[in-house]
Image (tube, rainbow, N blue to C red; front, top):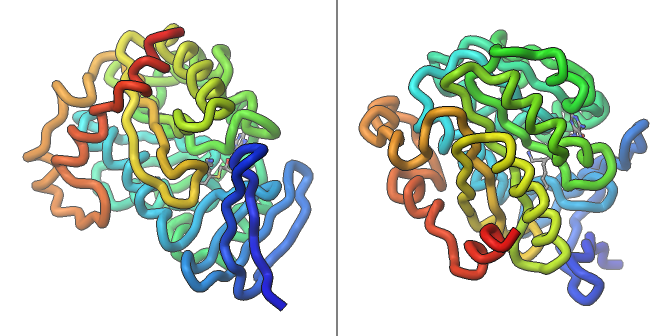
Length: 282
Ligand code: AAT
């Protein structure tokens, strides 16, 4: 008998991956956690039935959420990652020798445990001595922080369930306060393509531009997320993601990447007209 993972991308569209076998299934206090093996996408993690990452395409998401801000900000020493219990963002961050401390705030301990056991490709660097894991709600964690982080990466689930609070005005305002004067926040910014996702994306964008003086959106192609067209937000106090981008300095680090490069960095901020309109029409 064939086993398929199917996710509804809209009421009229589904996306399916043929599953080789189920590796893990658990119900935490916050969500249902499943891990499957597949021929086409390798091992993949879903939460409450929604795709979080696959071994085959996670490099795109994690490189774009980490290297874009790291190539813009001059001196990143202390980083806060909110969500991201799979460890993919942390894996990319620990490649930077200047990064001294990474606070990972993941609400669900069971996600981290399952990923450490079954997804070493992403979770393999969670034991780096610079990483401190906090099991907490990111919304609450940032409330008490002031002038502390050079970079905040919001690697969260979508704006329903436990991730909902990470798309609020209160949260973005607190992230602003938690950042140093040179700091920036990058978030997974949902998809512009299907109208229901686009509404959530627009709402989040409006709240971010109200909270930060500099705010730009960039894109990447992520095959296993709804429509494959995904956005990220870059919101900053001082540094502009292109004007202050130092390609030579980033190249001098000698980091090997599979997706990110200097042309992608600039090109990712070039948005299709329909996306620009969605962002402007609020
Ligand atoms: N790295 C790509 C994978 C993710 S998972 C996002 C993580 O955010 C999950 O492990 C979830 O438990 C955690 N999370 C959700 N809400 C909170 C919260 N309030 N505080 C801290 N952590 C939280 C991102 C997938 C993006 C999917 C896009 N469709």
